[in-house]
Length: 302
View 1 (cartoon, rainbow, N blue to C red):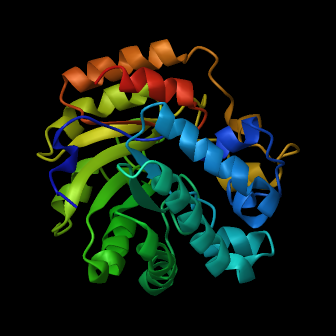
View 2 (view 1 turned 180 degrees about the vertical axis):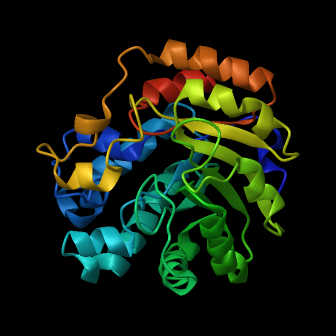
View 3 (view 1 turned 30 degrees about the vertical axis):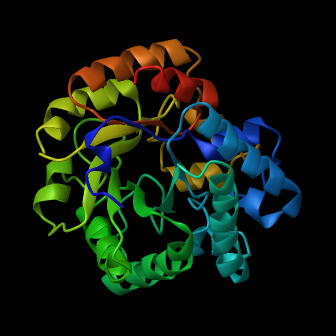
């Protein structure tokens, strides 16, 4: 894969988990999008959702692996399905690529412990989890996408895991509010404190347009291709934390406690994206609660 791929404007897909729920996938504990892999009756729904994002203009689709990490599966009593679920995510993404050969598949490596929080476990525990998931995804993907990570430590360990596959990677850092990741580190630390060799670029992922704008000056001066996966949640920092709220959820849908922005229409998101693109952003995509219609609006900017 060309390491300069993201030096020109590219369109990523939107938020798979929330889109699957909106299309009728029943919640199952806190499995979220992993339920579409666990239950065969949802496999066609998952494929069609990939295809609809592609038809809307996405040039890259991300494997549906945000909740196929070991900890989340263990919490839901299906850790024994770890291999199957990650391979199935790769297989379904490959089905989409067979129909649209020019798209790329990004292997999503999510935070291996909690969402929107820095992983404070031992390096060895984190490494075991990242490496296990990367090994399963590698045969199906064009590059790795380090998805919604919250600390330099997590990025460093994930990159160590994927080195042996000799594939490039895209960084997806998360900032819930302000200008620092949940670890207290700045996004510049992710670039400056790690020896990068096959870096495609960096994005802020699962972030509001307003908060992205707050971080725009820093990310555009990092000297690498940059961009975003914008969300349409009202907040991503629920108290006491995301995991506790999700486990206590009555509906099994994160929008119960994160809220959904009715104002962030495809047109409004496109206006934000146009401003970011004019500032130099070349990686344009959506995250939670963004639909194919949002991705279509982004693709119209190219």
